[in-house]
Image (cartoon, rainbow, N blue to C red):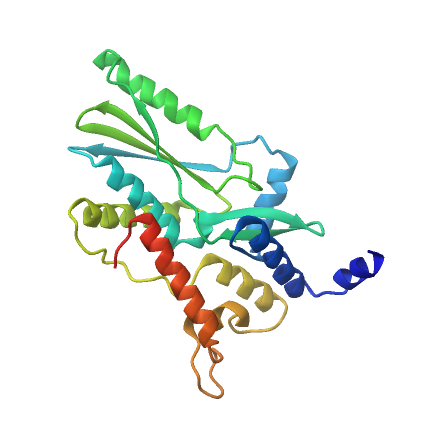
Length: 265
């Protein structure tokens, strides 16, 4: 046992993350681990100091007027989760430092509260109370994925969608992206049309690993993941040649995400 401990202690940070990914794959049936960005490291540290503090929860309330297809809405949110690795991320501590754990597949069940049984004059006040309670509910970053969604029915043609994200994966700009993709994908699913969003070439863990390497003095995109995304088989290229089998596995996995979430291309 002591020999194994000694060998692990000799591994580089990248080798330890690779080992952790292997262990997580065995445990969860598919996940990858990556370095966190410096902003995420700060927020993770604050969460360890005050785990029940909801100050870094980012709320968004979308009022949806007109006929609503609730099943299509839930599929839409899960399609967005499938597109963005940050929304499939939890965080673990390894040797005193946080790492991102990106699940290969994660889907949420849209929460639902029906207020039609209340007097009409009381419904919006109750919806506001629910929104405040939701944003005050903390995330456990080691266990909870960083997005929650609750649908509140005010009337048959009037709903509030309560979205809560943790700031460790989101900001005001990200919420805007989420809203635009929600409108695009929902419109496509509700009318049985093609989704007109292209696959994302870069994910947030790519940036986090690039940032770590850049700060370390090694300019250029991180090798391990960009190879699997945008590699070019040409000598001297900024992006090294892709590993065909790894790229095929990742494309296959992503297609599986879209099918599982109801998304179509």
